[in-house]
Image (cartoon, rainbow, N blue to C red; front, side, top):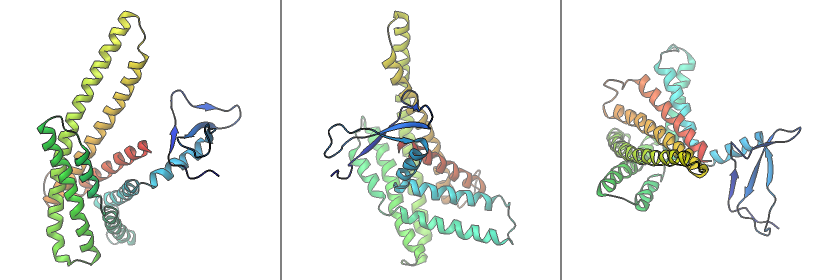
Length: 283
């Protein structure tokens, strides 16, 4: 009897490995990496709709995936409220405010223990220079402290801790988050520069191969992957900038240029959409 699969990988090459049956829908192969009791298992064949369900299931299995769906719903509600699209006297307005507040509290519960991820990320990082070390400490340390303090804010808003501490905890959390994003953005710009150097090197190799009349398929594939990494890194920087803007708004109590409720809510929605895309791609 076959035991549980330890790991399953969906092998999809959007450019080359898709196939369409003569009468049926588009199909893809899902190949288990490890089967117990079968040396050469046959690949499972599923249609595109079933694959979408499997991907969505894998996405919802991630804590961060559910958190970002909650974030989208929260900031979409905040945009509606901040834009004054609904009258204050409308019943729906009150329900949206209650919904937004409840979702915000739920998201804090999802972050319980999440600071450990930053501790592990810092411990497992390899540093090329003292500057990389310093920026990593700022980035992971700031974010880790933010998630750690958020646990106590959740306990305060849940009623277990005296609410009088909530204000000071929120300020500490906002400062830690903002400092963490400064370090994270700096690190990602350094990574982006390295990616651009790799891209330029591969483009040069392809140019030389064309002049010599030799093949360059391997370099072309590497270049495609490097460009994908560059695009994802740029999206990640935009996400950090949006989240940093929200942290700054918390520090300054919404006073300042681009720190109003509507602009901050738009930044929150942008961050949530980018993060959702990144999590979906990684499924």
